[in-house]
Every structure is written in structure tokens, then in C-alpha cells.
Length: 156
Image: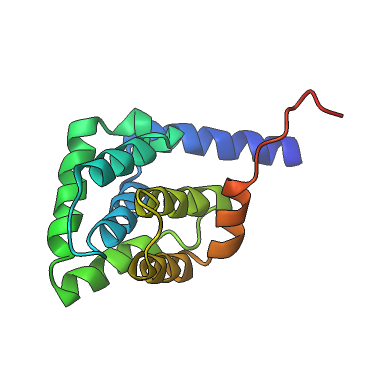
């Protein structure tokens, strides 16, 4: 039975990828926008990192092109200009809290990569904490896992 369940899950993921997963895309750009505007300035490097991170998702790369993601990211940044817009962005992040851990962790990592351009400032760390809480993930554990060098698969 686990084999059939795994096969069905992969089939659903493939169908979702080609149809476009709007909730996952919105969570990714909204989390990135929260960090981008946290320090009060929008840097071009942060935008590029956000787009590259969102496109790294195998689900999103098939359903969205760079222009679509760029537009969604700029809309999320525009929303972040108001308190209500920031709450809406966080709601879009929280919308995937019931998803598999790899999707939630992926969204968090995009935001963390954006925050880490010049080192993570205190205000960005606070934004990451809010994002982690919305995604129901452990921010510290994810940051530690990302910082550890990957072991070679060949190593015994």
C-alpha cells in the first residue's frame, strides 16, 4: 500500500505542477516580500534571490514563468506597504501550513536566503520568526540544517 500511496502522491504533485499551484506560489512570494520590505528598502539582489528561490521549486517551475512570478512578487511587495497588506501576505504564507514539510521548509528557505544578503538583521530575524510561525516550522532547525555542509552520498 505505501507504494501505491507514494505513486498517487507523485501523480498529484505532477498534475499540480502543470496546472500551477497558486497557494504555494503566493506563499513563496509573500514570505519573500515580508523579508524584502522588513528593513525599509527593496534591493535588486533580494528580488533576484526571491525569484530564483521560488523558481527552484519543481512544482512552481513548471507552472509559472519568471514574468508571472516577478509580477506576483511585486504585488506582494506593494501589499506590504500597509499593515493590512502585511497581514494578507502572512495569511497567504499560513495558507500552506497543512502542506508537506518540504514545501513549507522551501518557502521558509526562500525568505531566509533573501534575508541573508548582508547578514540577517534583527528586523529580518523577526520577520523570519513570523514566517516560521505561520508555516509551523522550526526556524532555528532549518537555518542550522542549511548551514551544515552536505555529506557526500558516497561516504560511508
